[in-house]
Length: 114
Image (tube, rainbow, N blue to C red):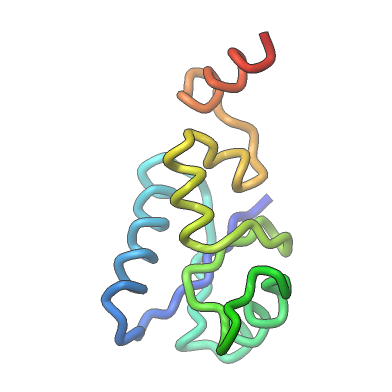
């Protein structure tokens, strides 16, 4: 399973840049493998991302903004969904991955199952 993060390398928005860096930095720090897909430099990436963000996750007007997160081709969410999962120690579940043994998330899951 490959986590794909759709980003815009040449975004004029500092908020978007900050959110992208937050997601990528977290994945790198936790050694979660991912592919960065640039929608600014690659029209195919932009088109694929726009077509695969579910209707109920799109903004009322305009297009979905990066970062958008997928596990293979399965949509997992945007920055806000990622941030909420991180705050709740549920990032691995959010990404559709098994939490590694010894992680906070694995401990929370073990307590919930007990």
